[in-house]
Image (cartoon, rainbow, N blue to C red; front, side, top):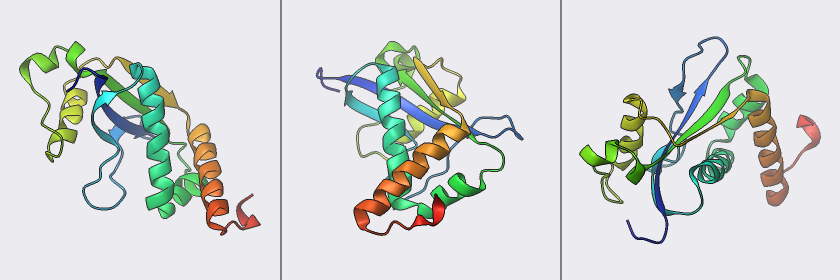
Length: 157
């Protein structure tokens, strides 16, 4: 890690009103590009701001790469899925003293954040969004993407 920014680990999780247990979101998208958990080097801002920006980027990713999943959340989320992102400032955790972050490009790098969550390492920031808020954000992002592509129809208003 360079001295330019911070090193943050993050995990995006969901839970529904029926289950009440937080679980990591599934990977949606091409190949090995995992955006629902990971470690970012040279991250800007504080953990809270980083978490908000990362979550927003994840929603953009869903709209671009998994439109059928977005439709499920927007139209069929009968259990009102709640979302959250956990963010750790890696050097500020005790975990970093006995476990090092794999280098960029290592397929185990995303597992570092997952391990922190599983070992109940206290995150430096937790942001939560109720299902209705995420559904609205996904709906708006989906609509904007359709308008940019010229494919918007009036059927989902």
